[in-house]
Amino acid sequence: MRNAPQAVVSVVQNFGWMLSARVLAAVFSLIYLAIITRSLGVSGFGKFALITGAAQFLANLLAFQTWQIIVQYGVVHIENGDEGRLARLYRGAIALDLISALVGIGASALILHLFAEALGMTPTLARATLVFNVIMLVSLRSTPIGILRLRDRFSLAAAADAATPTLRLIGAVAAALIHPKLQGFLIAWAFAELLTAAAHWYAVQRIGEMKTILRSDHGLRTVFADNPGILRYSLTSNFSQTLFISVKQIPLFIVGGLTGTAAAGAFRLAAQLSRSLSTVSQMIAKAAFPEIVRAVRSQGARSLGTMIAQSFRVATAVGAVVFIFAILFGQVLLETIGGIDFGRAYTSLMWLTAAACIDFAIVAFEPTIMAAQRAHLLFLARLAATAFLIVSAFLLDPIMGADGVAAAVLANSIGQALLLGAIMAHIMRGHKGPATKLA
Image 1 (tube, rainbow, N blue to C red):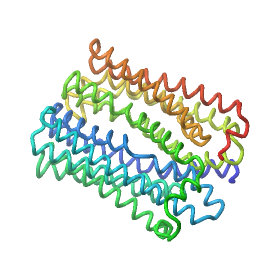
Image 2: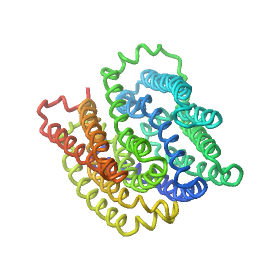
Image 3: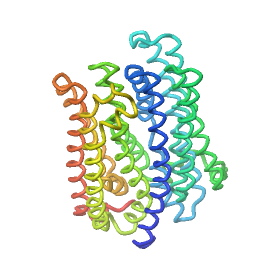
């Protein structure tokens, strides 16, 4: 077990590598979003956002969070020097990804076959959408991400992550020059996803872990015996992450369905800008997760109280600064990137940024709950908050339009923060003593 200063240094280093990739992504995303919005217009961008959002939602709905599984259980095998069990864990994670992809491809084909005409898709657009969905699903990269994070190779993971915004920018420029239509940008996005997945697997090969994956050993059935509780952990972490992704995609679908594609396009751009803060919070959580797992295994979750309190104070201060920035410059950013028609989303941007600030303030809660093997409580909290989001959105949209849906996102964040805070208080009190440690 590393001591506290070493753990903090490791988290900072991990976060630094992830931040470098995200800064690049943020800069490039502003450029390619400007290209797409000005090429397709507010209504066309709304259609693009709905199609890509639906594909991402389907991929995340079915995909298991294999990166968390690998980190959670791989730490034990590395500490014990058990390469055989580690190899089986890797292969089990890959099998989960493959099953998710196959089920998703079948679901995509069925949905488009039955509802493409009702959704107003031409046969050409339906085919392009199906191809996009297939590539999104076969490009699942949770397993290689988990391997790189388990081995503390965040620099390679950051380099692989940088492929997505770089390739999207290149693809957006190419599509704008060659085929500035919806299909052209969908094809560009699909190739970016596929090549990013290839970059992650190349990084795994670079650190020599492909040899571990291909190691000849017992079949996958022994994975359950090797890793007690892995089935329950896999299901609850998957359901929890599905709800987390749903919170990001469902509001867009509600706006598109109730208010129209033009409103959806403006809402999507506002969501993209506000999401930068929540992206930073996710990076911190992912960077800290391996160290939190090690700390909980060694000392129990109660040992993390000081770190969590400090992270809350810092995150609250940063969130306040970001919210003030959004108030002052949000309108200018929306209109500069998308054009005058996108300025209508300023009020939505305020609600969404406030929600992102709350999510950022509780950044340390999720990885601690997961490391303490309370994923089922995290899932229940998110389930309740997501239900509240949907009900609030349908009630507020007729009154406030897209702004009402954005306000519902803020209500979701507040509810989730209260519920996760209660779970954290329960863990820190340690009602079950050693049970807060990993098995």
